[in-house]
Image (cartoon, rainbow, N blue to C red; front, side, top):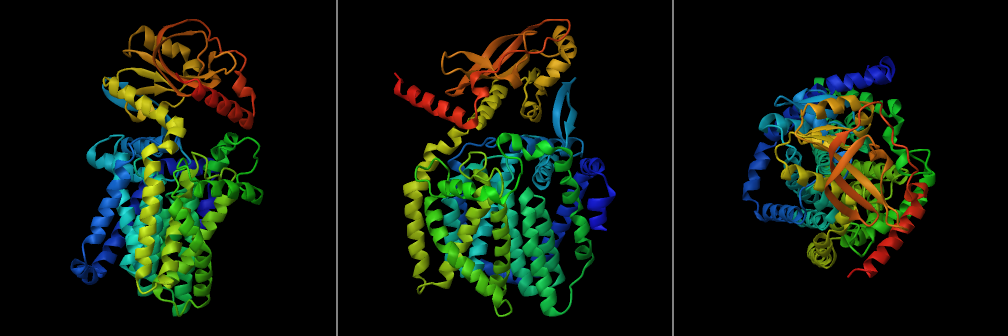
Length: 600
């Protein structure tokens, strides 16, 4: 039934409509079932959990200290666009209308903010659903996404400690927390608005529940384990691959016990995957969702031909010594040093799965999920971890390195000294490489689009009345902050509507955001084609900021609009738009080098 409903019965258009109007309720059911399953697991484990009160308190102090360390080094803000703003927009529609769309137009109508138009986004629904729950419980605030990731930071470190503890004891748990804290990329995402932290939390949650199920083999453990895997698939696109080790673990236990464990939730689990299958049809309806245009020269999203180039870029990320790539050098060196031994350990454990302890058996099967995930990203056309937008995709692989090192160290523990030795090495690497990288923020400064987004938010803070209209191709950022917004194309196609609002003073002001390209030969600034409103709109510059040597970001106020038929912007493209990405990058670097030399 799940296969027929997910892939045969509904057309792609009908599938998207089903997600738009039923996605919120499907996530509510999934999350509620998972919460109920976890409650039963906790009650079942209560006698063992009560014994934790006799354990030392230093692991809690370690987790809290490391979590605070990650949070204080980065400012809260939207770090990766468009992902984070689109997720916030989806949570906004889930909160206001219980529909799953990203608002593209929104207006304050006599004091009530209304979402006017939107479309289904390609990003999975679990993270925006959780943010929408925060909106429901505390009131709508864009900052709720930061609150969620702050909590998830401590949850992630707690689960990291528990995973390490299951593998090799308290020393292994402490080392795992320290290794993850040494990663500047984690600090960047902990203070952002993305779904990367939730993805790591669900990976570790599923792994730990798999370890429990391998040992307990009862219905409660199976329900929690399976539902965690389904929610993991609803967190990031490629995380659906972790259903492979989930399914293999369940099938192996059933085969080994010579009987399946079935509850009504387990029977319904294939149907609970329907939202993912239906949502995935967005790639059939909108081929642009693959974003192939972002990397010219590629015509397929996945291919083995991309592997060699991706490996070169990925190694450049992991072993970069400048700190500009938000990597952890000590984690890369120790983790990759242990990775081959971890692969051998997993292979040997899989060969003797019946004799392996439950935690090690589950981890060995789960290693197949980590391998599949890594292989998929290596075959991805945009799988270069040294790209500012793509670095976050390396987080699961960094987590794999943490688990690999802890597992190998537990196997070769030299009378307990291995954890102290590794802790000293991690501490040295943290203070020598990771901490200076966090202090310089080079990896954040390089991605100027994030700083530009923060600049927009500063404009909102400086103009708290929010009774104005913004014309901006990134209208979602204004709408999610309860500011009326509309895209540039809408302003061109519906110029009469803009004139009506302008003439009747419906808004206190109409502002326009534009990017301008700088011609390196003569220094002339030209509005980029996507932001050009043409000669019909007369603009007055209000705010202006230069985030890169060759681009200027400008906020202008509309002072007049010419009536009559719309005159479309017609102009020759600026020099940089005619060049290939490699030629454009060379001009940028040459200009930057000359700019630095000529500083007064």
